Image (cartoon, rainbow over all chains, first blue to last red; front, side, top):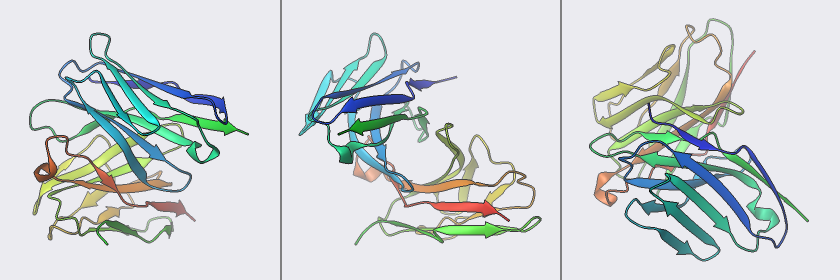
Length: 112
Length: 115
């Protein structure tokens, strides 16, 4: 079945860039998402990218999609301590299936 | 304010007891979802509903039940058959009318603990 994989942990220094990676297996993916979860809270959508795009930029966030390698990345520029959270990658397949396939999440620790 | 509300924030269950978690949305979304989150296991789909009076099992439906009598509401009952209910439960909703990307929006979650 479809699968989404992420590395579990990432540690960066405040002010550096963070890059969180995600790989997926579903070649019919239409949309890919990045969500952020702070401790004890629900998930907040950060951004999404359509599968026919290579890149999407939104302020400090840059999403890169390599459809050939089924690889998605989220770059956070000038990482701040408030960016410490768990980041989830998810993908949506084609057709009427409204379910998302979720990665296990990457825990980002930002050190002062 | 539009959004998704979940209540209660914390819920305690005694052995053999059924408990119901509330999820309400005022976003006029047609689809609603229930996820369970355990440490290190990401999100697992319990049930989802695409229209009123209809719902489908997700990946871990055993020991849970849902109803969708109103578009705004999708309560989840954790039954006594669920032997390991301690987890963080997240409700979400989405709508195709907002675009094909059909973003799922999440509530703040309910933490269920077993006494």
